Length: 155
View 1 (tube, rainbow, N blue to C red):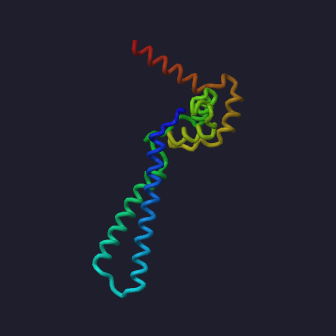
View 2 (view 1 turned 135 degrees about the horizontal axis):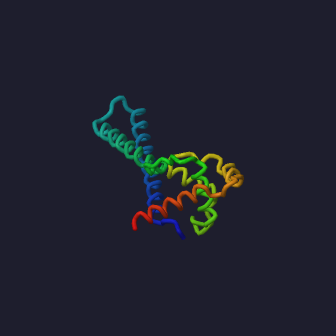
């Protein structure tokens, strides 16, 4: 398998932590609500409990942000979008992900997240690749030439 079980376990633990923290906050706020319904004043320890609930909310905000925030590579794909789609189709055809079991949609979505762009209608883009007059793999051909030039510059 090509997936990273440590990353998966870390993500699952973060999700578990989020729900555990949500449960604690809910219980604490219900206690405060019940107490306020029964009393006209609040003892000093309740102020500390409210501060604790606020701290939990801040931690929850950070956990949710880390779990649900889209992947941010710090990169922006600035080449034409058709090139990103061409790369995704090449990886799919090669079977580069999940021993060849990954869908083209997942691959395109992952590339889009990595490059901070929307992969768009990649099936339509594939039709455009098929209609090219001078070779189907313009981007891959350019990348191959660029890599060979870089290697040749090293010698």
